[in-house]
Length: 423
Image (cartoon, rainbow, N blue to C red):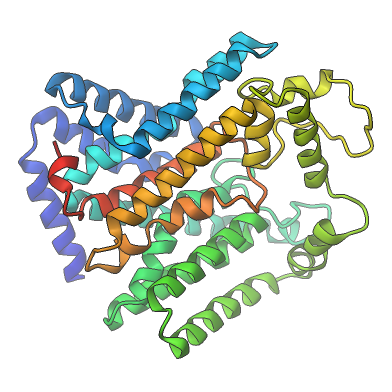
């Protein structure tokens, strides 16, 4: 309790030193986790307002040194590659609109690193607000389970999926993508030499894992499990007994959640492995194959940013047995190849790699555990061997880039070069 009290006191003191409009923006920034609980439009509004305020601040103060950082330049290189793709797309204007809109996501990360990270106390409070948002989501999902348990657990009902508070099956994304920075925080606290922090970290980590499984989101559940495990391993690779105990707790929590109903057990075991290793290709594999076929048709610049959904239904394929059209191919790297070609793919890999490296480099010399493992967030979210949402879409990208932004801001607030970051 004393630590929580100190976080609020330090944040209040830091806020009191800010000019009026910046103080308002910091309060607005702290409201983000709760706006994300409402719906995508308030969340998108939150991101856009922060982006505009950050650019206004840069113009007002004449501070543009952040554009000298390599990872920032890599973001803009990829952005330019999407414009090139749009220029050669058969649906140029639509692709151009998608390209223009996409920059708001990484701009949130840029604003977080070069503005929010100036205030270490507010970073801690932001982590606390994010954690409170996740706990509130767990209460909401508990209420949904209580009300709809029979339908949730039955075949042909809700298919073991949860949808509150959105009315759509994206609650698992709030836990698994938006909340991924808190999974890293949980592992960092479990690795601490303090009993209170260990209990807090273990409780939050298991809560995240169990409720993500209960949403029926298999990929998000794997994402949380892998992030918790990798962060624990990174911080404690020499503590074999500790890792065995920690790993056993994670596996035990996962088994407990998965075995809560027969349908959920089947979904996470036989059904899951049948989809990967079955004799008949799954829908995801067909989508990936379709994306690669579209890439072959336009390998240099692709078919245009976000245009997979439109081009797929119009393109004549030589062999349609492995073809499936959808809004996107459900795989970031396949989508990038199909929509932006080899040029965009190279720029995207450069951007992702530079973000992961910058986050690791900023935190590697920190005396605190959390900054050292924040790089796991972008690494896990951008890991190529997973099915994903639309890399140019709205809802999931808002959640994903929120976590990336906060993960980058945490180590940026502690690095020795902070005098440059805080200009």
